[in-house]
Length: 132
Length: 227
Image (cartoon, rainbow over all chains, first blue to last red):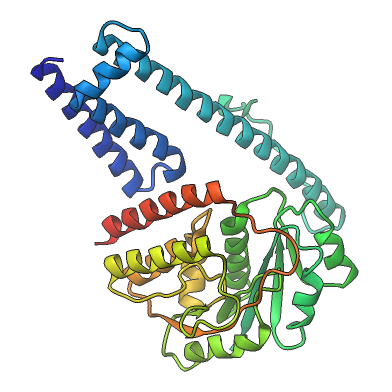
């Protein structure tokens, strides 16, 4: 890997990690989901800087060009991140449904006890964001 | 001073009754049932215990924070975290709230490791606890011998703080550091804890390593936030 590419990669990763740090510091993102991005970034940095190790791994897996191989690894890694996020999203989606249902049943109980007013709601155009 | 004992409970059907009976005539308490899959809730109903029933499982952080929100809502002056599994001894509650009443501190942690008496946890756990002691010393310059102790008393200002901000998993070390960084006075008093009687710890070995990393990073992050 030539020096220019190395510098570009390192700077890009540092900017990326810096942005992640900014998001974390200002509570815009949860540490739990950020860990995998942070680790990925540093692994990429390691592979880029210590290219001898990268070349060794490349040949071990039967590939020819280290740079291509690193793109391939990056792709697999991002695929893994996306999958883990999909799993987390699915889980959250289930929990939201569960909360909504329990909330509704609770609301009915309170309404039956006269603790919540029964009101006619003005029919308003529905926001797209509310729909499932 | 109005005192509340917060008892987070996840699947503690075997020990919750004994735990509550040991303190219900002395202190106000609330059980926070974190969507237990066993009969913890039934035990609460049958014995007329005061409990909050979470609609989804939130974990120890979410559960305990719900207790703090309840303490804020009901205007308590002091809140104590107390395990539902019988590891904590209600006789020590007096000892951990005393420095708060006398306004010596905002937070009092019941530590197993000041005098090293009673149940001292497994080797791995103690390794983790020593690690946190060193990390906290480095970040805050304060000596906290038992940062993971779930036996902790706080005053009203901290009740308000925790109802807004409280970590989700493995919350004790992170919350203690957050308090010290924000200049709350945190002290420790020695207590004796018992071995867990029934049920299982919610933290396995692999999870332990993940938690150690995550909590360390969270502590470092908070340090950079509050420097």
